[in-house]
Amino acid sequence: MYIERLIVKNFRNYSNLTIEFSEGINLLQGYNGVGKSNVIEAISVLSNLKSFRTVSDTEIIKWGESSYYCCSTVKDIESRKFEVGCAVVSDRLKKRAKIDDIEMKKASEYYGNLLTVIFSPSDLGLLDGSPERRRRYFDGVISKVDESYFDEIITFRKVLHSRNKVLKDIREQNASINDLDIWDDMFARSSSSIMQRRREFIGTFCPLFEHSYNFISDVEDAPSVDYYTETGSDEVEGINELLRNLRKEDVRRSVTSIGPQRDNFVFMNKTGRNFQDYGSQGEKRTAAIALKISELHFVEGERNKRAIILLDDVLAELDEMRREKVIDFLTGGNQVILSMAHEGYDGELERWKQKRFIIEYGGVVREI
Image 1 (tube, rainbow, N blue to C red):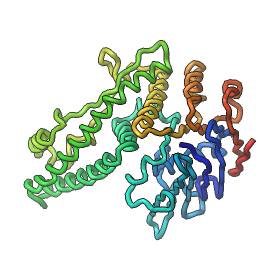
Image 2: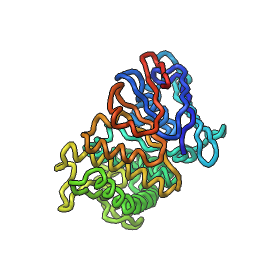
Image 3: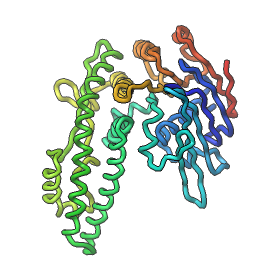
Image 4: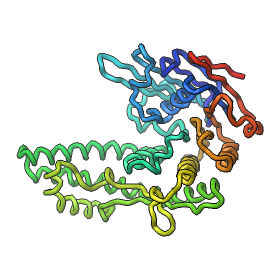
């Protein structure tokens, strides 16, 4: 799978841009602030229906405009077209996604069809950041290969919202404690499905992660990654029982105190020490890169197709040893689209058969 052509309109600093990529290495070079990352961001929107920068769609629309549009033609077994458009209409945001001119009614129908893995400096936050960030990341990885899991996450969020609303109504004496029965049952069933799928996933993913970490670093022991839940049970009956035991506390706080929304993915060393506490910045960068390499191997193994690799100015964050390892990894046959400084590691990249683009101020892109 590789992107043949990218078209963007009114996206960030680009009014109208078309780029023809090669199926190998594609290098986007330019000074800071010219819009290199915006090209990577447009592809991430086409792949994941959202920016890898975790910003709102209104922030992506070019200043002074009311909509943006992204389109890519992708060569897989056959050519396919992916389109994502977003517009502000009467102060409301409307977003549509199409594959081969057919509008997708559900996000899960679209997500995972254009397979990408994105490396960015912000990946370090997956190690240092909140449990919520790690949950979002791993849920996204699973959803790339499991449409039903994507739908279950959406269902769970709706059930959680409704249960929390009932808890608040009970506290304010606008509902009965018995009104929780139906929501507890729905919450337990959805939670059980999510937790069991997460645990199954991590059993496959952890060996991939350890192998990838050892590939990047020959001298450091790889941490393991595990899934932790406070429910003590992945079974519907056990979750339901715990919810009943916690009802009074949940009503008092108007919030559901257990469930997948509070679980965590934890990185640990062989002695059980949290990697977040002991890992150096270099080790955490290694772990962040290993995560993304493992994601690539996981989705390709599950989907039996090549993913597109996107790198947003990542090489500058690495020391020479880790940079060489990443460059070796990138020559594995996938399409690679990476942004980097105007003057960078040209000598290290000479062995690549690559297509280069110079991006200049004003959204001008020149192929060289």
